[in-house]
Amino acid sequence: MEFEIDTLLVTTIVADELQQARSEIAELGPLGALTRSQLRHDARLAAAPDAHTLACRAGCFWCCYFTVEVRPVEVLRIVDFMQHEMPAADRERITAEIHANAAALAKIDEDARLRHNLKCPFLHFGRCSIYSVRPQTCRNYHATNAAGCEQAYKEPDNDDIDPEFAPLVYQSGGAHVDAFSKAMQEAGYDVAAYELNAALSVALNDIAGTREHFQSQGLAFPTIDGIDVSPEFLDSDE
Image (cartoon, rainbow, N blue to C red):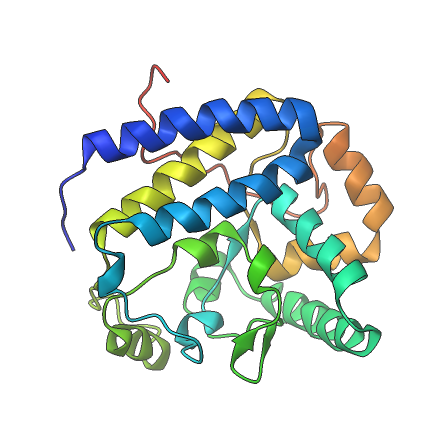
């Protein structure tokens, strides 16, 4: 699907988020800054002029079987939520599923992973059990026709499926994520993207060690590979 960039929308969001994220990272640390940023993220998506066209609703979860990439700060926020907000039985069930998923995905290459349907460990009875702390990838995944998501689920090898999405929602979310990630990178933190299950499996096996790696501004997950994500909505001189 082709669309034109709304330059005013994108530059306004980038400038505002860069300013606020820089300030909050310095004042609150990366986790506190992410908490604030996620609230703004949701508000910006809801305020997009074409938000009313979205088909995404509670109980629709085709996308919860697609691959998800996360930044280290998001992983630590999810781990904190699991530790402090989840009943022990749910935490144990989800942790076991995370480790099983990570082991299964470790046996296939990246191309196969992108085409492999695998239930998100946080999907429970058709709903996200970490909705308030869900990753940026999940917040930004929106469709105007759920039939396309269903088709992508049923035909994971079909490269001709052209998703229908709301361009201004997409740009609002993408600009926000680019700006927050740039502020984190400027502060010296690891902003590479990692596969959700692999990163969480490493973090849950050594929570203290993962925190130390991240806070010391090294690679958060030295034992697994991350990928550098090129920003889509940042000018080279930002």
